[in-house]
Image 1 (cartoon, rainbow, N blue to C red):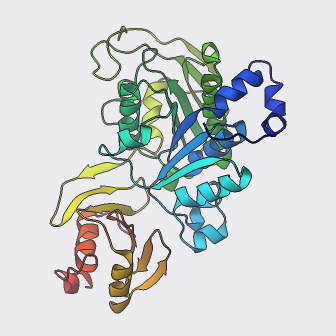
Image 2: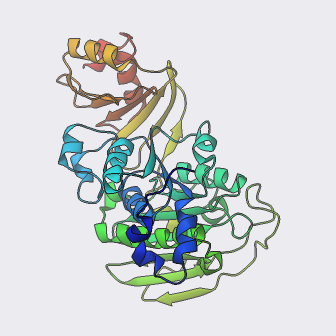
Image 3: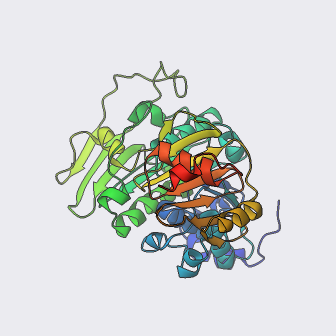
Length: 385
């Protein structure tokens, strides 16, 4: 166990004075490890709540980098982070460490996939959802349930948000609640986002996390809560138990169990159906040429192309300059603005990922990667037309 701040009782004195937590609960928090999946708006808010509550170790995972369009709602980032195009996980970790010099914050600039989800979840006590697509949420919830780890779901778009704490052996899994694949719907790039709804959702997620980690598990809210904070429409539905036929949460539930609803205002008639309106639009696509996998990111006019090999950033940057690209570089990524008449940008990561910004056409994104990345020249002239 790492050495504790000798003044920890003073740092957390106001929380310790809250009777349900007390000193014993604070010690449990300090011995806990939490995985925060995604360091966007929800992830930033969740990370601050967990750090300031005294959670002993935070594991941050995010595949993206900071842009100016993030700054109005992603509270751990500033203009310097955007100017330097810093990866969100690293920029967030740096800010968190300045809030608490003794904080143990582990940052991973990575996509969460079926190949690494178990690695990131290993040894954690809780998984907090700060992601923006159904595919990753489903994957993480599946992995959490396999490991007996609670998964705290959260989603927000426009002025609407929803959250639930899903507990292995106690509730259904996310796959049973939203369907096997999820559906496309509104997201913050198509419908906008009100920052206040992010804080509302994150606060509810954080409250359930602190209850669980401090030993107050009987106080955990066993419901799916959704709201529109602009219209003030609120709906709460009791979570069903695991469904007997589900390979993830099955074995102890009745799939015909009725939900118990408590409603204030003109909320939706189907709270579970609403989940697919919250930014869930990651779509896996077929493999092409030297590309291992591709997916269109949530409403961002961006395609993530995963190559079948790591990327040497220095070598690729030199080549891209020679092709007339303007570059922004740091030790985590290289961002290239393609030469006129092309309008796209390529963001290269050493783990073999390329974000192709300025298109949602997967075939074109892959064509540009084949033309500009990895030493390939095939298709370059065609790409420049």
